[in-house]
Image (cartoon, one colour):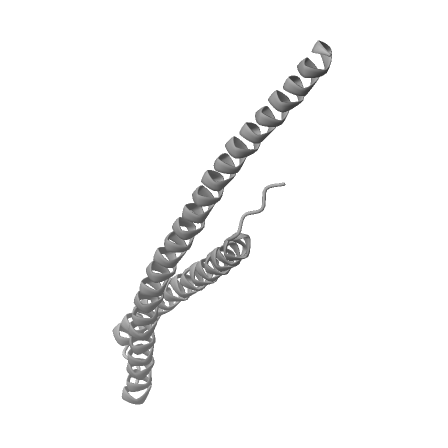
Length: 146
């Protein structure tokens, strides 16, 4: 029976690959959520700008205009912060993708080693079986002569 000496290492690499894939999915989902939040904030900011422009055209009082301006500034800061968060998440996503690729390569390399060891074991096993069959044939031939 074939026994790969590095089977536990191979199992560990599979686990590491699964963990890396899970981490990549989580970062991808977070990237998507942050992107959606950015779109929502930009839309809200545009809406606020249009409302401020319309209110200015109607001649609203100065305190209300200042309040509207503060809301615009707050939204602008939130948009910028969300953009920064999106960029950070995108970098983290790239790192996780690279890590997953590395884990897949590690596992595949070990699987190739396992396959090579299996082929070597199979060749040795076949050779031993042929030797055993040859020996049995020689013994039977010797008995037939008697």
